[in-house]
Amino acid sequence: MKLSIVVPCYNEEEALPYYFKAMEALKPKLPLDFEYIFVNDGSVDGTLSLLRKLSTEHENIHYLSFSRNFGKEAALYAGLQRTTGEYVTVMDADLQDPPEMLLEMYAKIQDPEIDCVGTRRVTRAGEPKLRSFFSRLFYRLMNKFGQVPMVDGERDFRLMTRQVVDSLLSLKEYNRFSKGLFSWVGFKTIYLPYENQKRVAGETSWSFWKLFSYSIEGIVNFSDAPLNIASFVGALSCLFAVVALIVIIIRTVAFGDPTAGWPSMVSIFLLVGGAQLLSLGIIGKYIGKIFVETKKRPPYLIKENDQTYLTKKDEATDQKQKETD
Image (cartoon, rainbow, N blue to C red; front, side, top):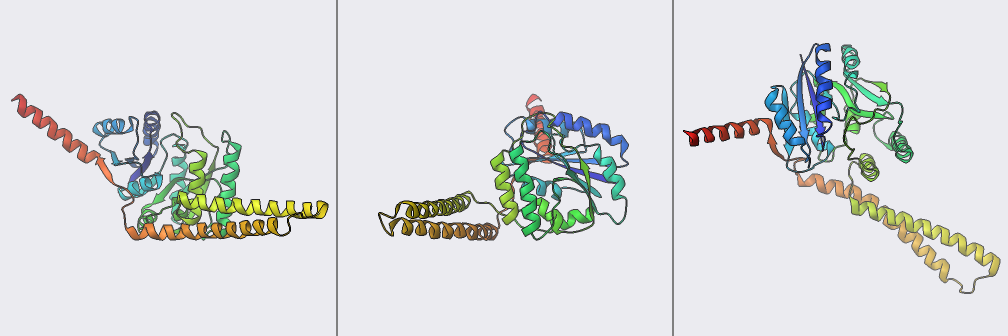
């Protein structure tokens, strides 16, 4: 039996050695062969060089390297497409997904009624309070207005059977939101709680605004910056109009209205215009999603993988040998 391990990587040069060491220490405790599939998502540090080195030293290590940064969702999709194991897990390289949990996850998934074992953070210690607030708000909104339920604090880190992975790969949309797709495909899933873990090394690439944009994408399954700005401006116009109306009413009651009609007319225009702009922004998000889907562009482009690298390396060695001869 084989376990395929999908690891998206973006500037993880510092964390990868710690991750690989932790996984190799875990390997003797599981009755599974390990197949590593690292996906280099356009890293600008030495991540690719390290992956090349690891793949030449270990036969069970494979990697894909994108032509540019396509995002974590594309990296997850590409990694899942390359898996061959009966079991598949998705993990981050920064060790915020504790490898030792795989022992309990594997024990749980032996139950024939269970198809997937996920993980969820029960605390957000060390995380900024504002980020924690919006994260919880996101899950509330998704569970209230979304088509599928989502567990608060759930992570992409999970152990899946082959059937679950094949079902995920059958979903061909360009705009992917994995947490929603995991729930949409169904299957029996249980979640294991754990305490929040700090990164073992390196810096996170997820800023507050990236997470905010990602959450909007999760709600509408697509995110477009200009349309986000349009929606924000529309909402802000509405707010200013409401405030202006309140000020006008108070001023009129207290001091009279020296310019009859003009302030209220401007406030109403702002209110209506802001509401229209907000509505157009929301509609535009869905139109933008349809527009991207109709282009049929691939979700990622691969520049290099372990096979092409080894082939080029062998060819270069042969050429050098010929020149020497």
